[in-house]
Length: 457
Image (cartoon, rainbow, N blue to C red; front, side):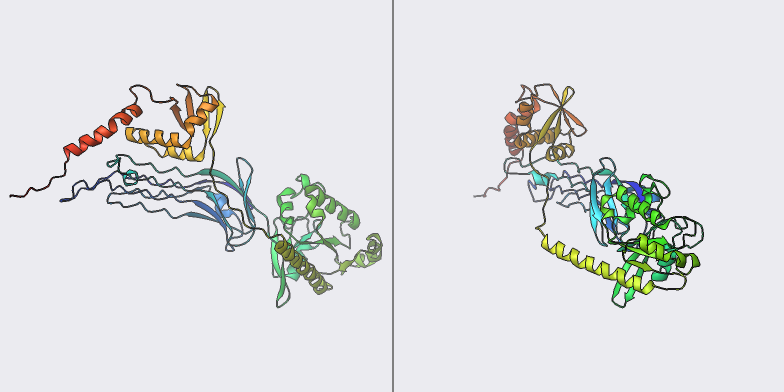
């Protein structure tokens, strides 16, 4: 069972905007008509009942989203790319592999999370036109898509878990109580991966039963199958602690119980608080009948279930009792969920600009500023002029001054390096546009005047 892996996801970049002007007979000054780029594909991880392991992600380590379509002339926008969907089994937990932060717990079929957002499309020059800027020769590049390494980890979703030392009869109990067909043999560690089965008590009464690989002393530190499968116990509501009443291997059944409970507590204190039903198994063996009274006394009167998977004795009673516990826990969880229901919280990225010193340079931390820079064609003078105005309106110049930046300092925005200049420098392009741009527009009007046909009279 492949229940843990890492993959690299790369969302699609947005399409570039288009620089285009309407050229049509009898339509003077058609104006800019460049369309916007389409949005890039996001990478979405979603839970589906149709898969049970992470085998696909084990062999496919890289998931890429498609790029959005580029804008075209005649105000044609580029197409949005369809999202890339990664299918995982229910119960998968998604972590950021670099930071370790949990992104989502896909604990039911249909749950999904966007692990890498696609980039937005760049605007075409038609989006920049105004009454004072009638012929913009500038368009935005598409925003690059997010890239992230994520770790996928499956924790089985079962109502009841079978725990106990190896060769205690857990797999046989699972095969008798449910429709599962686990491997059964006389040697320890027969079960090398968790097995799930549906236990049906009545037509409308059922629960999911999991046979968890045998635990031994030191399992919380990795001994035996150890931590690889202890995490699968975390989601269970009830534990059936299976004990070999016949003590076939000469072990002390009560001491084995203490060892297992200690390992569960050391791995996660929550597991020690889970309700347990003690199952004295293998009563069909003569040694089990001889030790039965002694085991009952050592358990101090705690309720136990005496079963034999070989003869079927006590199986129906055990299944009915387990379902009663699960049904009661489900009711209490529903009541608790309804009492603690709160209004959903809406998150969005917005707000201030953070500036931090990084060596001799200043690092700007702002999604809005980063997006404005990476989507600008820095080889286009008009685009740089528009970017300067936009960043000034955002308050970047004020934030840099407060951080102590001076003329000539290096400003780091994402992977782009810029040189900070306060105000308008003599001879700079910004100064040229501020002083000459209106005249350039007037000159453009003079070169292409509206012509009216004079009356012959």
